[in-house]
Image 1 (cartoon, one colour):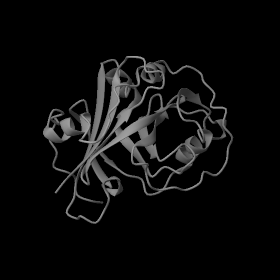
Image 2 (cartoon, rainbow, N blue to C red; image 1 turned 45 degrees about the horizontal axis):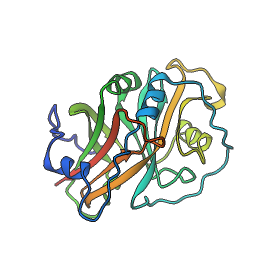
Image 3 (cartoon, rainbow, N blue to C red; image 1 turned 120 degrees about the vertical axis):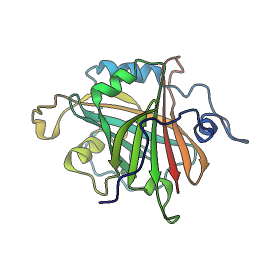
Image 4 (cartoon, rainbow, N blue to C red; image 1 turned 60 degrees about the vertical axis):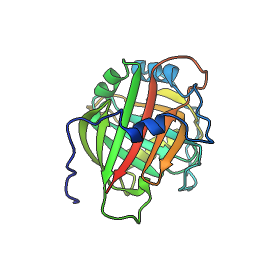
Length: 228
């Protein structure tokens, strides 16, 4: 196992790299509607929604679109939260990571106007692409939540969620569990949305939730940063 990162208890969310990802770089248009108020409220309430999609084997497309991506936050009510990133809803996720925070903790953070999740990786190599890094320090609104390791292979539950939500672009609710088995961690919940992708450099990029109805509300952003 790789050595633990030497990270601080807090992450300065107003540092220049983060700020550069919050604002469009020259030649890029960053939409003001990139907030997910409606979906975040749905995620907090977890209404009973059905995906309406068919089970099937998703096609593989490992690379992200230059301007957008599909992100899914899912997990059991009493368990930890998972983050999956796909080029589109029909592709196998190119990144799945179990965040070191409970669903209830993330729900509490969503009560604020801004939710910023930062993943920071320290590395000694320049060979990997940013999202191919394995070990991440995870911060939520500046607080150190712990460390995570990117998954090399999807487990049955993660494949189950991917297949259930195949073709679904946005939504939030409760999914049937694998083989309809009851879990001590409660119901399997999810939130999926399109995110605007802003690339600062080969060592920094961000994903900003796009609210389909343009309604005002809390903003959710996910930052990936790499230091040497």
